[in-house]
Length: 132
Image: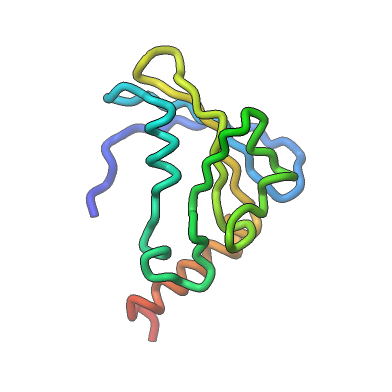
């Protein structure tokens, strides 16, 4: 595995909400940012947990919504075949120029964030024979 060669800059604002982290992302790309292509790539992503069909791995780790008013924490935090284990992405748009884009991302902070990621990691380690 080769580390990605890109920089990340993040700014966080804590807003009181029940069970969900909603993020607004701004991305600069080397290639032209095409919202439909980005949506297809994200929707088609499957990782090792999906390939191994782990018990807490959702069928779609990233769910792309076309609804302009989504994702929303109350409506989408439990999306997916394993409720709360998928991220929901929407509002995919071109950014300031043809090589930048914006999107909104929602993940469940306790199911996917705290407990779920730990359980999924343990399942992956077990399946790969890394636990005794």
